Length: 163
Image (cartoon, rainbow, N blue to C red):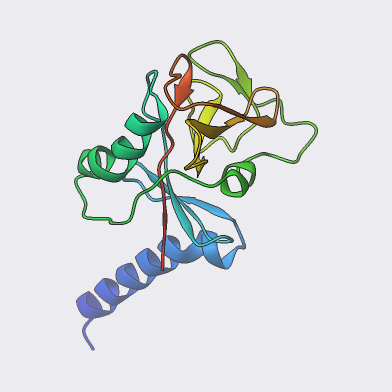
């Protein structure tokens, strides 16, 4: 083989290894470089940011499913609001990690690859018989139900299953 062909093959091999290095190293989260983050442990893809503004539950659900996917410029499907358990999986367990301050002034203890503009995130969990849905608070690390029409400080953080 010619040196030029060997050099091209070597470059391709390095690119492939570099792309899968986080997975091989056992890192749980990978920045995909397109506004998304992959969670290899749970098989999920997250938006790197929330919707950046006050939003009620019905708007959040529609934004995650219909509006957000078009902001990426890629054709990922099945975006939705996360479950409570999925949101809780984004907490950093390290006691030395101080988190970061959001745009609304809260300190959140979530993985640094995901930037929240405020700490209250809507979940997909709602009561069909009542006008309420569950919120997870990344600032004080607790969850509660609130009326779906509430919007002040609440955000949508889209997620999708990889399979």
